[in-house]
Length: 449
Image (cartoon, rainbow, N blue to C red; front, side, top):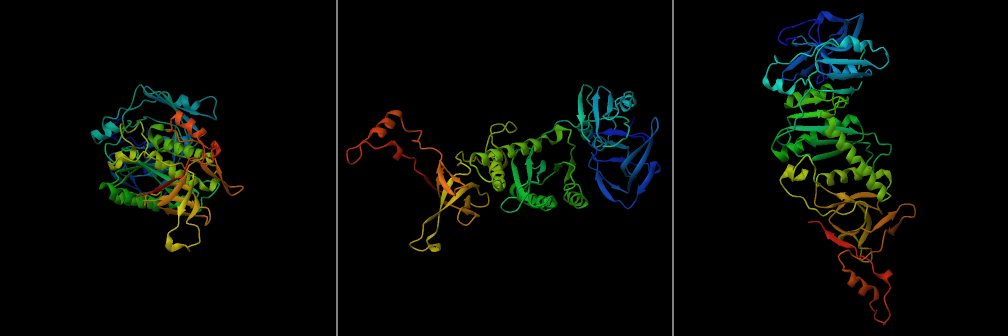
């Protein structure tokens, strides 16, 4: 099949296509011409969608292909693997064939129809870049399972090469997690991650509703582009409605951002955001469990997990942490324990002479907006930012009894064994040996400059 010549009845099976598309208006049984939008093709050309409807496909009977976009300027009819699999098909790609299995049909009639179909070699695309990005792989073997329609297959399954960005903001991965059963202290139930492919630097934002994604993305875009002096080139997301809507598409088009949508069965495309999402959730869950914190603190745990991951080595970035690859600055290796008891200094002008100089709180992480610590004030029940804090990392808060509990009584690790023995048996001022129960590790007073 030659891409340069039109075959009005044939479709190319395309794993990168977000929707079924055809230029053949006569193929539609039903067509809603009020549906208008734009689509960016693999060669970065933007074409207009002039309608959407159902197409009848003749192949051992009549099959109806639903939700097909009508694009008059399209050069080749495209059959979306993602849409097809949304109805429960399983696809096997190998050699020069594409085999489709209908999970509800034990006779595999769909597969028998597909076995004789050949994969075209994409040698007539509009540019060499396209040829590199949409290549066929004769040795590819695999089973791709996902979700789409009772349509038959035709030809071709090109796959994108595994590709890594060579500079910051060339590619941004994004994913939404939620809803959480328990809202955070700020009544958020979702969080969204943005991951820079080159540096693996991660940003997290919290939302009450998924509908806030567009607003959050614009906020993120302004931040990172001003920090780096570069522009976002590609945004890669799933096919959720929060990413795929006319408002989002129009903004990306106006800003020159290529919006790539992935399908869930393809780990080469969405693996970065999925793995990061899973890692963040596992870390947050562990931090909450370790300190016996209520689930309402999940957002603070997620925030701290992302903060720490940005400062930890990763295989994706050699010899650097994500934040160093992003900013060029080495991060501090000193980190305090999430959920530890701390004492926040109250400024003189905010207290009377006989009042306490500190208030108890729980350490919830580091502020990225100012040089301070994120603290949950146990008295006011509010999240605050403070610079003058005294930490007691071996203590935790008992939420049931509302009191401080010490996890362990220990002598600092750097004390040599002989000195430890001397300290255990050293005489007190009255000549008696001092009990080891009175020897405790002192809290650390830290001012974040």
